[in-house]
Image (cartoon, rainbow, N blue to C red; front, top):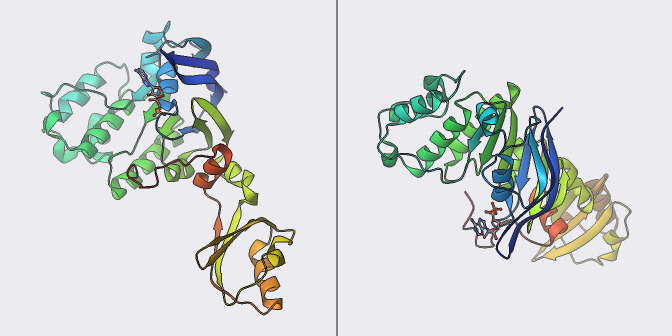
Length: 309
Ligand code: ADP
């Protein structure tokens, strides 16, 4: 059953094409990820999905309804956590939750949400006094307070410490297990890898690839990687000619071999026969980050890592 259907969506701001011919559909009970670097058009796409922006072309259906024309009906069923949601500074945490709960016919229990999101001891604090991470957790609570059928979460864990991130991931999995369909915008591949059933890789306003995290990784160089330090130098062709091997790279003293099947065995045995020992050997699956680089030719994060959690 399709819950969100986006068909040939296009949105421009002046000369900037933010979203360009994007199509995807989200199934009931799925956590669907929109992953890509800053400026890729992720937020614009979900803002069109929730009716905050008018597309220039294409169509959007949520639960079979057109988001702008049916805003009132959809407000009951769609919970939205968007970036930098401004809230009244002079309200206390419990008052904000109580106010939002009053918008819905069947709200969740605010005390339970505060408990799960670690906000109970902040219940009497004013919104403006909260730290960035606490504001973030409150915005997640507000997305879930109406017991929505669909939750749209943008930059879910930005600004949270590692423990709070893990707790939030667990919460999102619990919410999904209750049958809620989740559209998750992120630029963290570990988040997408952990949570998403399927991921659309956004790049410059377009979908570069759409698959499960594992499916995306497997598209790239067979999906396995062996890294080691050779005891002595050897001719690259020794490994490059193996049927399991798709590519080979030197990184300082390390050699990295990409491939599939029984890659590690093939590498170790072949080197051994040639009198070479593979020291400090590590076997890794190719990450979503590698898949992104391979599929778009671009890195997801800046090299300086400044946008990492
Ligand atoms: P992301 O969520 O992936 O970071 P956005 O959807 O925020 O991407 O932005 C996509 C592109 O549209 C960027 O080039 C951004 O600068 C531009 N953009 C976003 N919002 C606006 C706006 N309100 N006015 C003009 N340009 C915008």
